[in-house]
Image 1 (spheres, rainbow, N blue to C red):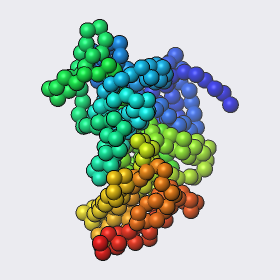
Image 2 (cartoon, one colour):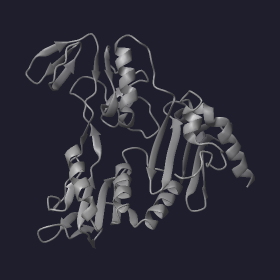
Image 3 (cartoon, one colour):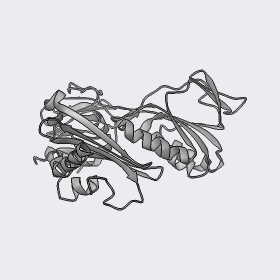
Image 4 (cartoon, one colour):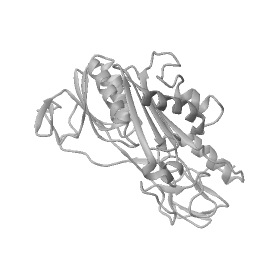
Length: 340
């Protein structure tokens, strides 16, 4: 094995050009160049008390400052913004979270309602939107958002990420990432891609890159580049634990939901203050193509009403990531909803 630390500048059939101009030949190659943070700073973001989380060192700097924050505004991408807000409110700070975008598909509206209520109980207000500028005499004192001035002592920017593929003739998907099939193969022979710079062809759950599955897609790409024939599972599960809640979403990656088209219907139900479930299915056959739930993280493993089991156990506990494993149980849930 030869390890070379350098930067790929471009790729072509059977070679990669690196930063010093050398052309390295290969039998197969894996593109794993990850993501870059989207630029989009606004006036005043360099003031003391403002943090742009575009690298590990920025998170470390934020961690050292968190205990001294009293009133903070977090703005940017939704999922990581929720995690930052959850951490900050646990230390007693009052937080306004302004979500400007979701890198993957946004949670269902009924799920967002549950999140907002749980966050409000912990001193976190969640809104959709962004800020236009940071103001203050010397350091952060307020932000301007939607025509209003909001006092704060800290601003935390959680930038969205964009794919960072190497320049090449590889076909790109809708997100700008390298398009791959279930085996992580690209449009060029012997070229594979994985992680944040790869997008599954025809993907439907989240319609984004494989950032959240960098390890899995990387293992598949590496194995197949050496001659194996593995594929990523038919379903995907996204999970998040915030504000004392456990959110989980399982759905088909490709194919069936797109083929069903207008036959797909979504039903949702909220139970009390802290639980909700959403089932997406085919009207005629009740064939399930997606399930999303949120419930207290302290509830028992069978706390998903009326399904009776957690999505993690259904999707993975039976030794398969095929969402068909949850179809029968979800069908029973649909029938119970229809009767009630």
